[in-house]
Length: 312
Image 1 (tube, one colour):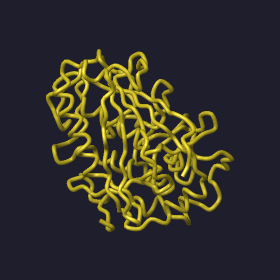
Image 2: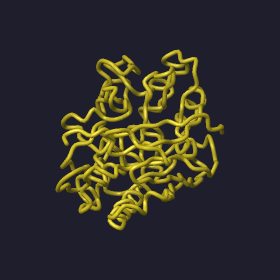
Image 3: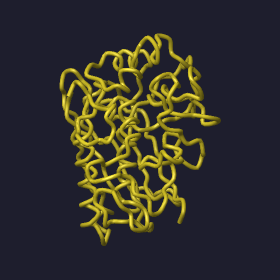
Image 4: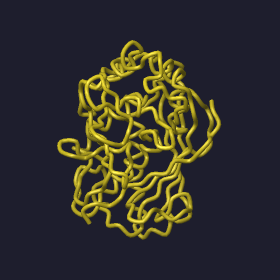
């Protein structure tokens, strides 16, 4: 397994934030939590470095979407289903969920499960983690609203006294750059997570309609229901009880995304990150089933996504 290093860079807009010092403290905590928790599954132990630029009121020097409290843009590469299947099923030292999800005899059949004739999109950060690419260029951009009210008193997101949790919004956007996304067939394109969405046991659903949930065991067990509202990202959680998390499709004021200082995200959030191919290394993740025993392509497009406001 290799280590994850997140390098954050500031757009010129970042210094215009009057609360920049407090924002930087929270951003440092988000980066630290992700670096502590996540690793690569690569047997060669290669470390990966991910570069993310942060903007205040803009993303990649472009005006953020109207009503968005956070927004990400990231580069994507393409890969065939066959290569993705070979890579995921070939990893060792997997946690319980990954052992099931990456089983080539069940959840990763030899034949493309949807008959996709297109290649699958992968965020450049995830291509590094999976070993498809070794580049050092910028992986993505994250923008955060300059007009929304954010709670900047809770560094670890365990409380939220008012406004939107800045910790939660940053965690939401950073993990999208790390590959937490679906495309549900839009423009006949898909992401790795689309492989693991179901409407019932044994029935896959990669369309943004009807019942759609993430599952590691062929649809028998739902990890979390996915958002189908076109005003939000289809790769985000639906957000209904008991699945409230930082990965919800719509931001809610007063919502604390983590359960304590030792558990920086809800258990379902870590489940999501592992099913797309990240390893877990950090302690105190809040879900015993996630313990791990094991301790190339050219950029072709940019994907943009954001968190709309909800609840004020």
